Length: 358
Ligand SMILES: [Zn+2]
Image (cartoon, rainbow, N blue to C red; front, side, top):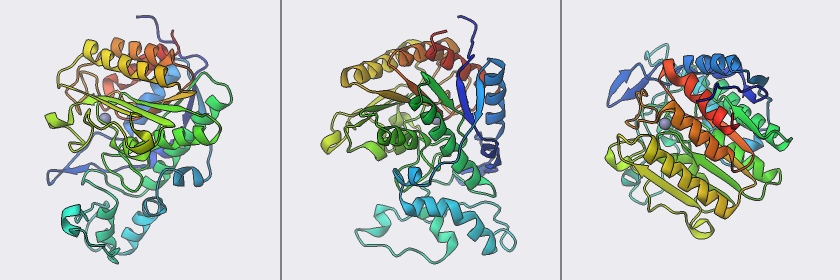
């Protein structure tokens, strides 16, 4: 393995990404410490700086870039729910220190009827958040917004001629759909970047998702479109892994998007060989379809040491995946998952050095 050298690689970053402190997650009814912690970003920033990358401030972008892939309802909910939660006394009177949904308007509850938007603030959260693990607190919105701005800034840099740019996004985004959020994700940073690239003139964009989990949100956003390909390699949701209900090979897109969605679920325990075969298959798809630019949803939670998945990819595997993806053309890399703090920085640096073929 060559010495990682990221000299000249732009890293879009905002310190506001540290302001999101979900204070854990409610999983199976118990409030756990959670793994999507601010330290993830500081560890990454340190490793990237040490490898010679050039950190640049994420620039604020027009909210229109968010609304190009998300509903106004979701964006305004995320922007205001904490303030309204606090003002309604859930923290001071009821000791509810974070926004946690408790009722969900599932298809079963509604039974085909049209729901009324609830007046009660505590009932609104479940209308947008589809799990109990994706909490909102003070500073969450500023971080959510900053992560999207980082992705948009990285896209701008590639549009301006950079061969690759990396967005240090936190919180991650690929589980956030057009009108929903969950899986520790709020706004879909990679989809926002992909759509911005389309609107700036890229005719075909490919999103390659190498996070250990299926990016159900990105799939949902582009499912009926042919201009944005979505390909994902991830642990088999049928083997008991998030997002459980989606992420299977039979999901190939719909209407004009038929064939532009590809899922390659892998058995728990899969290591470099099987995982890299899947990454190569997705790259072959992108080459066959043509893409002016690739957005990579760069999750490193498929690594062996990661607590959030049973895949066993090595740092060298990540570097080789970077090489495969970097050979496709210009790349906007967007940080998704990756939760093992001791190895996180090395994994991302390895992927990005592969991307730059160093
Ligand atoms: Zn993940």
